[in-house]
Amino acid sequence: MNYGAPGCISGPIGPNPTPATARSEPASPTGETLTIHQTDHFDMTHTPLSCTAAPIYDTTGELSAVLDVSLLKSPEEKTSQNLARHLVTTTARRIELANLMARTRRQWVLRFALSPEFLDVDPEGGIAIDASGRVAGVTHAAARMLAQAAGGDWRRPDLLIGQPISRFLDATIDDLPALMRGRPAHERVLRARDGHMLFAHAIEPPPKPRGVSTTLPAPLLRLGGDAPEIHALQERAARLSRTGLPVLIHGETGAGKEYLAHAIHEVSGVKGRFVAVNCAAIPESLIEAELFGYAPGAFTGAASQGRRGLIEAADGGTLFLDEIGDMPLALQTRLLRVLSDRMVQPVGATKAREVSFRLISASHRDLRALVSENHFREDLYYRLNVAELSLPPLRDRGDFDWLVERILARHGREGRVALTPEAASALRAHDWPGNLRELDNVLAVSAVLCEGGEIRITDLPDRIIGAPAPTSDDEAGALRTALEACGGNVSALARKLGCDRTTAHRRLRRLGLARPR
Image (cartoon, rainbow, N blue to C red; front, side, top):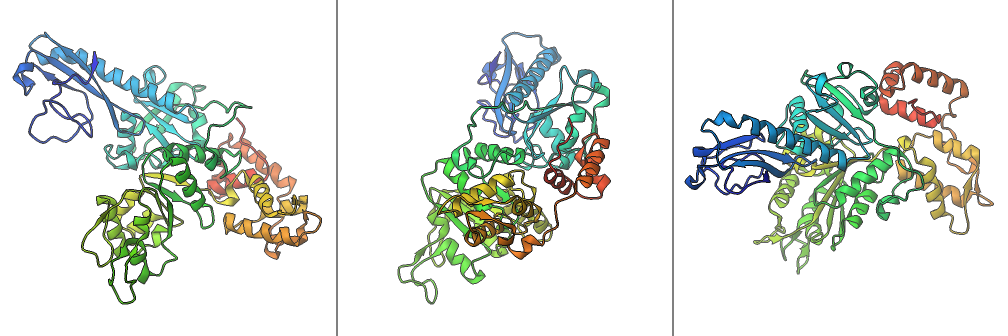
């Protein structure tokens, strides 16, 4: 048994095949096990051989290895290799599952099978799901299942990784505990979005050991405190930082998208600059010259020596395109060309210049909706949205008190500034439409107005004081009872309350309630 025996595979079995004796006719990759039996070989010197091979994919859906069984002598009938075919297929599948389990120890893993009898002993595939309910890794069989459920192509793993699991299955992360091994296998059923039924086994990540120091890089640790959704975001950002993949950050205005982008730049270790471009702040008449630069005398008023554009300034570093959803369509076309060719041509210049940079983009708008409305190029969207990160709004963050403490430490230059309990309650009750930017401004002003190093409720702006009072104990008890009646399922609680799941989570956190195990 060996990995990719040279000269034995005569047809592509993965996205990037490079067989030594490949056939000359074109063939699209199938991703399936194949047998090249004796005279099937293109090279006549290999006709005594019978080779059966299966591809092995990594957790991101990329071809990683080929498992091959080659025989020097075998019966003439090709069907004699069915056992070898079954052997390499099942072994490759088990290798992928073992790799997925090893690489995603801190995340949910959902294993599935078409029959309940094999679910717990030999599942067909597996999916890793992060704390925000997004796909973090897949086996090859799972990639095929997800792509089929969403009407996509398994050859495009970038359209699977980072997407909410609810896009492919009729389930969310809150439904996973009901699929653990405590229930009989035949009762653990999931419906895919294309209507197919699957038997599923959810494996919960182990609890984080107490007293163990985190291995997250310092720039990412500075972004948030000890909240599950923030820790999951930091871990995902840390993994993406070590790659050259383009990253698209979603988040409301003021949620800290540029801070996150800069942290990724610091962790990535690139030597060049971090160049931030706010696509919504530059006038449309100037943005082309700002991004691409211009040659001497390119237009009236142009500097005599020309000017280097922001894209070229990011060469060797990171280009951060903030509010990319506001970029004009004509410029989207030019940007797509730069991303495809890695060449930038200044306005009025006759020659293009080669550039290399890490691309991070961000938007508070739904780019997918803009694509459907023909306001954003679909091909550019898929160039940008290779990996996704979602920043939660401030009102949904479980590390709110940690953020307040860090911001106050920065503004209390002449000594420590604290909050009275009444002021802290008023801050927690506010909806924070301006997110971190608004919180920073409120605390900066309050730290100046307060006396004796203590911010009282009268030191807060009127819009904060006028926020609704915290929910009463009676309402907290009613919400706890409703949650228990739903078996701890937040999605079911949200339907019962007539609100979305995010609002239900926010109410639970504000009242200090946790889902029962």
